[in-house]
Image (cartoon, rainbow, N blue to C red; front, side):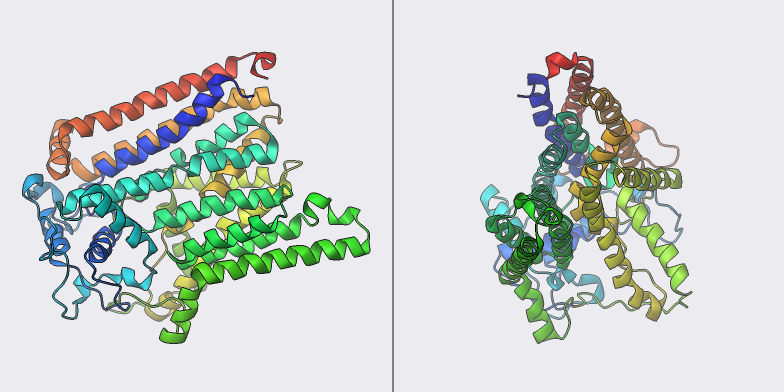
Length: 534
């Protein structure tokens, strides 16, 4: 049985991650996260019975169109990576006071039915509608379906925070299942703190939140397979969860080959390794696993994969284009240059490019992040006892990365533009990477539980420091103009926020208090005598 301090850490680590993401939900200016106007618009449209138009045919409703003007969307934030003298600056804008912002009702929710201009296209109908149905249900359940648009947006942001929270216990449970180490499980639970982009994106309104949760659940189930679970029920549940993801985004399809790989590298399951069986036994084990993989794929197809088959039959393509871009062509510079540029953009936006990717963290931050992450992956691959599990789990972010790069190549080859290289597309692999982090840390300290507990405060302190850095960087970049004081930036934050100053103080303060308690408990766990801890 785990000591009381450990059990409290199991509770407070998810609370800390939720607090950081909720702080981001309040900190990011309204609509200043990727595609937020379109995500909000699709939720509102479904909430008012507007259906799911064909890709490219959906338009922003009057309320969301007004919303963009009310908070000066399109103006450059103070910390933008490059000045644009011909573009208005957010520091010069005066947002409409929160109480006077547009309320959504039957007259403002839906467009007039005319074909949208490129600036007014809601391209989210290129995806299935599950996330947006969930968001519409939240608006109705909270009574916000006829509320102000900025409060609707905040409700959707907090919905996504709730979808993020299970990542923490799923990561911790997965490590404990693989290693039996309670402390290593806690190390895994800190992983999202090291990625400011996770709090920023999953503290905004985005369908990637549901895809992230699906990836987390499937990864934990994959760990069950890696540790010998060969039940037909587990295979069917994996297929059903992947199917839910496929009703959200096509990226969830890449979970299937990773789970199939888990069956391949641990043949025999509970019956023992296939190598220890006689020849007929090995064939029976392999045939049984093949049947489970087929069941998993079949269930995923029935639950959600049918949407993409339908696209292929009806639209002639698996992933339709929701927004046609009319850009002056550039000269592509070849595959090697493409990979260099696209990889850099993907890595930057995985660790911390904020806003519409225009608020860029310094190169030292994301370069350090990717170097450390790659090094930890290399360490995990050589730790005895869990090398196969690490290889399977690392296959998920690797496969997603290759898929993103391959998907963007055609457009680059035709136009010279980079499109679709966003780090949030890798968030399905958060639990996989969290487990790899814990396996690497455990391996580096020798594997003893007392040593892992001794490393836990260092990991917690480092993760909390990175989370604070991200929030401070975001606050400064979004709100503090050149030569302005912190008080000026706070006043601007309050002016853009949908809520009053009490919430803007209370949520970060409670999050900071939680961080201090978590760090104190981690230090206490590290100082406990081994026998008492056992």
